[in-house]
Image 1 (cartoon, helix red, strand yellow):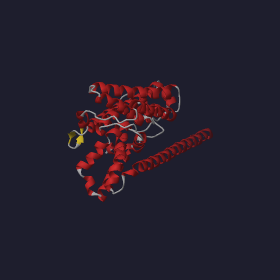
Image 2: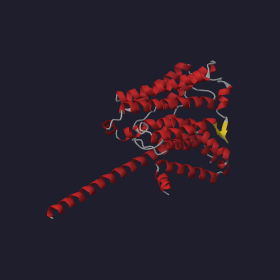
Image 3: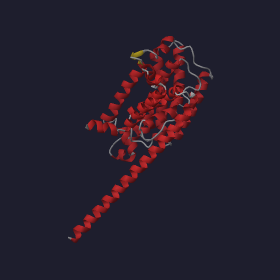
Image 4: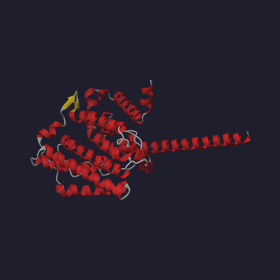
Amino acid sequence: MKYIKKLTKAREFSSLLFLIILFAIVGCINSSFLTPSSIAACFNDSVVFTLLAVGMAFAIFIGEIDVSVGANLGFTASVVGSLLRDGHSWVFAFGVGILIGALIGLINGWGVAVLNIPSLIFTLGTNGVLRGLIYVYTDGAWVENLPAAFTAFASKPLIGDLTIFYSVTIVAVIVIHILLTRTKKGKYFIAVGDNAGGATLVGIPTVQTKIVAYVLCGIFAAIASILYASRIGFITAIAGNGYEMKAIAACVIGGISLSGGLGSVIGASIGAIIMSSVSRILVFMGFSSDYDNTITGIMLITIVVLDALMQRHAAERIRRERLLNRAANSADNKGGEKA
């Protein structure tokens, strides 16, 4: 009973409940949506957004943001795809891609943590630079003719209809969640986001933690780019455009507070399933998938407003409790003086 209460109070529980209710409603409208293959497709389709959302979660945990992950994905996918097309080994191409992602994350972390430039401004600049580099690197042409074995790997199942990509990703998310919640250094990210000044006072390396958070964000974007290239089979100059909004929305819907210090990567992965399922849900409900970005924006605004209202309510409640405690202590002190 104790564990059930703890589970229901977790921020990601409401996201899971929302996902179940959403799928149930769509299933009532169109029963073919609730087939095992259709549900598995929703999970498989979310793998790229899950990786982006988990990486974004590290940035949001520390109270910052990274709006360059979509461009990071596009540029890294272009490089990895071209290397594979030109006959380089998978290991070499993947290594170069992850190194590029880590370097982009390091630059973002340096700008935000060391130079103290607002994360929205700095990563927006990085986004523009990367978008320009994609056109320079590819000459505006598509990166095509990727190896057949590479593109076929994306659809290989492992557990039922779930692909190898998604199965491994979920295991990775669980391991990361355990490391973040059970290890001392893993808890640094939440501590810095909750109170950076306080974290510094107790000996937590705030600057280094922020840099590591951005490096991890970049690495996850790079891994997502590899899976993206495998799933799509080609890379255009606008690959990953708008993915940063979906990654942020996935984190917020998954219960991660934009002010930092709250949430989990489990919640981010649940939010990613919701966000990636919007297009499929619209089709099953008889609407055009052109409404995807509109609905994503509406959901993001709604959740952010609700999160802000909840934080304001919590702050007011804490302030009221402090005032009541002070009043009670004052009354007790006066009573003791009279006695």
